[in-house]
Length: 173
Length: 180
Image 1 (cartoon, rainbow over the protein chains, first blue to last red):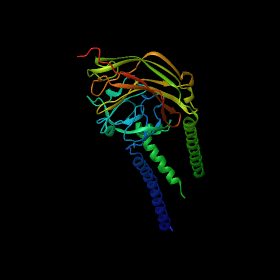
Image 2 (image 1 turned 120 degrees about the horizontal axis):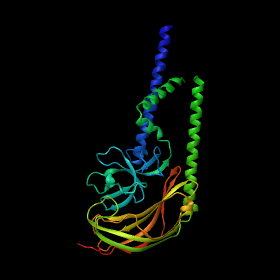
Image 3 (image 1 turned 45 degrees about the horizontal axis):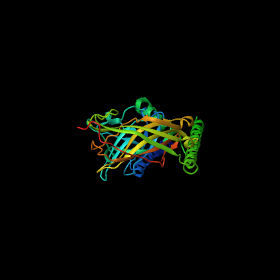
């Protein structure tokens, strides 16, 4: 009787582990799929600073689109300057476009000055192709606060993982 | 214990589903309203004065010595119809468009955040532009430019929209006052 019971338990545990893996891979594939569709390495971003207030506040979520070859003045773009890790969400206030290249200057709506201070040393313009990873098309408030909580507190990350594992174990059927 | 967790999960799922559909409905309805039921406002733009100087632009972090513009303008526009029930704010900007080789250019000279219908009637006279125009080449060479008013409606939730007034104001960059 005992071996039989333990056999069932192992099977059940394995099934649960498998469905947990399925949840993780589905989420990952959804994210990567969205990346392919929008042509952006990071199609959903969370606002981290108040430089676009009052429209975008810390913890709000932005949906990006990166299939337009040229961005326009007035667009809100997310860009990554080489050597700086954090992507920045600011508005395009200057556009100089040739057939080969597009140079941009950005500025936060809530900032008094333009972004030259945030660019690399002696860099006067952003390069559309090299540095912009998408322009904002849609907005959802608050939801991103969860990820801020997770990235800024290590305990929250482990707590969430534990919680997910726990719920997965609770689902027997 | 088991059924309690299941119930919490079910309630949570229901709440999120309803919220997502509600948000989508609010966004779509306001986009439809903006697109089909709101006439694009009439705008009147007038360039009072345009000067070009040589030196470091006064406004902004660009410290290169180059030609830059100083502008004063009048602006009349009633943007109240653009506020729908999902409009959190309007970002309004006056942009100068001018040609060039190899770069065609568009530069924001003035902007404003409008947060309520009450503040949406713009009536500015002899207003100094917020930002000066300077070119990639550092020179204007008497090029012609046009000014137009554009705006971005930012929602409480959902899609952002952009639009512009059809009116254009033409002006020409004069030769710099202190040419060197």
